[in-house]
Length: 231
Image 1 (cartoon, rainbow, N blue to C red):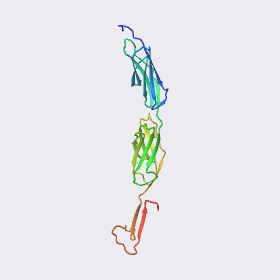
Image 2: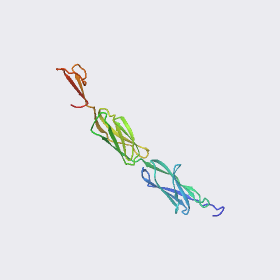
Image 3: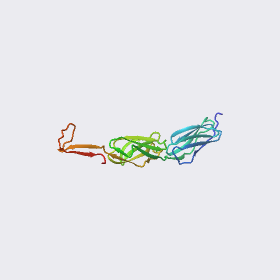
Image 4: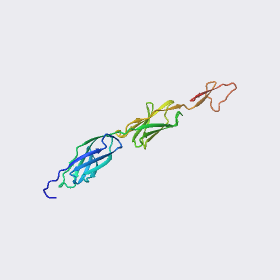
């Protein structure tokens, strides 16, 4: 190095592989080529104003591999020389890159299934694929929300005892978080029949309920009324 010497001008070019757009979860390779190839220093890769990482220049190149968040990106590579006396800094042109959300599917299991008694507890289990999906699942009976649960390792579970008497049509709707990473998806409806609790009421001929200890007389008529079941 000599006092007053002019540093060699450098240029930096950025390539991104694979060519976008890609889906979230795909590993993206960022490669910066610095000229002249004997330039020494580091390259900082950025997405807009956010630094993604740094690589050391070797034989005129530096690289970084990573998974980018879903959405639109503006990628650049900034070369910083080891010695500003020997080489100038340089920055690549920005490269626009798009990462699309990952498609998901959601399925639903209701236990116990088929027919349940009003007030009993049902366990609703949603399975979201791929299992790496993050977000939440909202369980509904037709248009009425039953509650929301967070997805963990591909599943979300909700227990409910609030299903009304009648035919319940239960669904599970997944919402990705962040939404740019995962597409939303919904299960097919699962039908559950909810019946009332069987009940028998005894009434004496005078219209009074039959209770424990009641005195009965010969010829007295006792009426029985049932509800909550199918005879």
